[in-house]
Image (cartoon, rainbow over all chains, first blue to last red):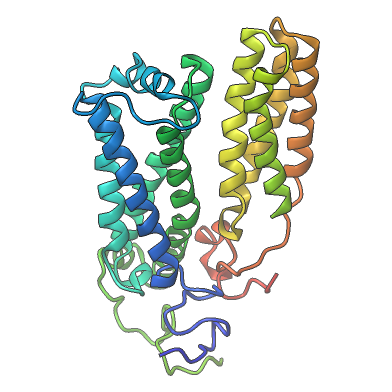
Length: 208
Length: 121
C-alpha cells in the first residue's frame, strides 16, 4: 500500500503524478477537519451572541464591550442573516466537503475537491474582509472573530493544494482523452482505457 | 518560510502601530487595511503549493509605500507604514525554498504535458 511509486518516489500510488506527497491523504486532511470544528464552535458562539441567545461574548483580550461592538455593528446586520449564522453554514460545508471522499479523491472525486476549494476560498476571503473592517471601519476588535479568521486562513492555506492536484489530473485527462472525458472524470468516471495511461495505475512500469 | 514569517510579523506590527504611535485616523485606516492583508498572504505563502500568492503582497507593499503620503498623517506613522511597505516588498520577492513537489505548480494546469517532467526543485 505504501511502496514507492515510479512517478512519485517520495509518495505512494495514491500520490498525484509529480507530487512528493498526497494532498488527499488523511494525514493532510485531518488537521483541516479539526480546524473546521474549532471554527464551527467559534461561529456558533458568534451566532448565538448575534441572535441574542447569549449576551456579549467573553473576550479576554479586548473586553466584552469591544466584541459586542463588532458583532452588533451595522456591517454584521448588512445581510438578512447575521454573519455568525453564515459562518456556521460555511464551516459545516467545510466539514462536509472536507470529509467526503477517500485518500484518492483528487482523482476519484474531483468535483468534491473543487467544491471544497471554492468553499474555503470564500470563507478565507470573507474572513480577511471582516478582519479589515474590524480594524479600519469599526475600530474595535473581537477575539472570537479573530480566532475564526485565523482558522479560516489556515484551512485555506492547508486545503487549497488538493484542488491543484485535481485540476492537473483533469488537464491531463483532457490532454490525453479530450474534453468530454475530462468532464466525465470531473464527476468521478474513470477515463476510458487507452494504451496510454493517464496517471499510471499501480504496478505499471514507467518506460518508453 | 522566514520571509513569510517576516511578512506576518510586519502585518502584526501594522495593526499595533496606530495604537502605540501618534497617528491620525486616515493613517491608521491604511495600516489596518494593509496589516491583515500582509498577515493573510504571509500565512498562505508558507506552503510550497501556495507560494505564488506572495506576489500579491508585493502589491500590498506598494500600497503601503504610497498611500500614507496621500492622506493627512503623522510623521511617526508615515515612517512606520512606508518602511513596513518596503520591507514587505523586499521580503515577498524571494521565492524561498520549495520543500515539496507539487506536479510543477499551478501553471502546469495549462501545460499538462509538463507535469511529470518538471525537474525536482
